[in-house]
Image (tube, rainbow, N blue to C red; front, side, top):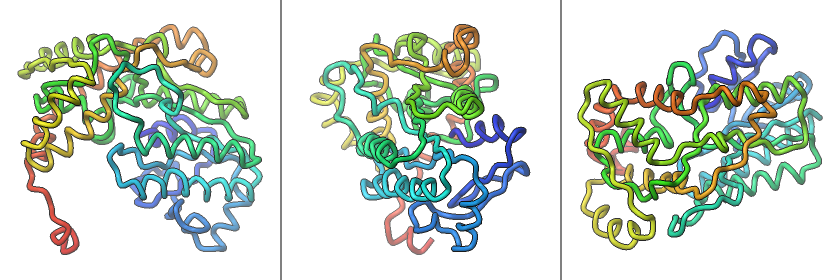
Length: 338
């Protein structure tokens, strides 16, 4: 989600080399190497790897499996073991590492009844410990929930909290297991990328930085108000989701509601309700944006406008989302044939 915005922020000043396993990067400003952080030598031929060690000035590690309900082995393989391979490369290259983690490795002040931490958060926390103990120059960046571009609302694809918001807007998620006063910390992807780029330009090394809205964060009531506004502007029908205490949802709704649904919808709602934990903050997260963007730029942010643009960009895609959810679930046999 950050990749395109990071390229936009850095391409004018640097020659960028991007390692990609399934390359979707078609930007002429970028040199793309096909590799895999989960493989020895990052999946590169030995001569290419050796040459890269000599070429780089710094490394941004942004690769991760972000699905909270993803395969535990895959999450650990990419988010931790993959980080081990990146650290090994950085140690050989003797360059700084800018490591992208998540704000939710931080001890968050959640409302009671929130689901236990996910394998994603555990692996990310372990990866932070790894890079800190590796004897390298490293800065850790902890973004919160990343939304679309601050100026356009553009988001490359349905994933993460965008999917959850889409399910709310389309009526598939009529109940959200969050208190209406819960904080939802959102950051536009280009704002997060600009903060990282500023840190890189200033050669800020050695600290942890929270790429969050902090005291500017909206509560869930504000988020739902903006959904109503977006759907009304686009003249689409919308039934405002009902907020419910997480513990009540887990005891009374989840055991009855989810098993009755079809496979794709059930899986999507499971992911969505897991992500709803991030809308259950009792107190705002810390933020480093005043330091990284400058106090005037931070103070001038309009988080409500940024979110509204993301919702406006998302609304026309709701039909495609609901059609996708209605597709029959592919069995393992069918998947292997395809």
